[in-house]
Image 1 (cartoon, helix red, strand yellow):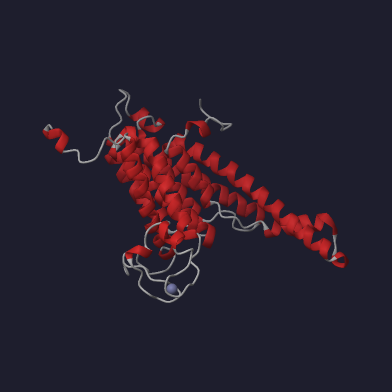
Image 2 (spheres, protein in one colour):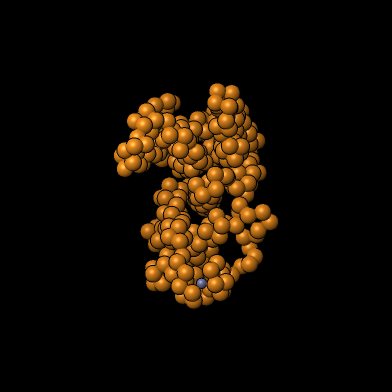
Length: 317
Ligand SMILES: [Zn+2]
């Protein structure tokens, strides 16, 4: 075996063996994401201490056998071993999604080497946290959004290949080799585009409806995402977010409409017809977090998921 072989303790990144290893890593990272989802929104809470997890019902410290991602939950049939309190299915779900995220990142980035594999995996993990916190609390944790706004310029400067085909970076590098400074410029332009568009949409929405249409957490998340995607990528990510968000929004109002109609039928005396039901459904279905759809758009563009990007109506070809 040559000296170079000794320097490579892992099988090649693109091998199936490494892919399996990376996916299992994602399962354990998913366990950590559960901690982040739980503790990020709590003022002053740290994800590092207490380092051992406890059962929230009986406060018993959990042994390693109870901390195995997904497996413990299945073996314990979704209950605490000590007090039999139910453990929410969200825990194994986040662990499975963490594994799926790492697997997808591996498929997309293994050929580009360690830096891109790590970047894509970490960003997907952060987007999973933002998605679950936003669904539960209608807010995006600053650790993800502001953290991302600090990380994006640093990563862009250190890894110019990230913006190798960016519009701004390309204009600053006429000979085709994007350096750290050109990459940083693309990042800042992307941040301004992502944050600026959402801030503008929120401003218009507030003018039009009088209510806050866009949370500032969404603006910060898209600014961070824009810094990683560049100007053109930001434009694609926003399209994905608007289309999926609108579709889910319409389905949500339809769901409330059916619920209200069913209730009206059960109490015929108070029945006030379908237009009243539609009005109620629109009010009830109004509050939907937008962060998960932004996260979806950022993830798809970051991984350069061509099959999806080709579906966008305003593609640049
Ligand atoms: Zn317990």
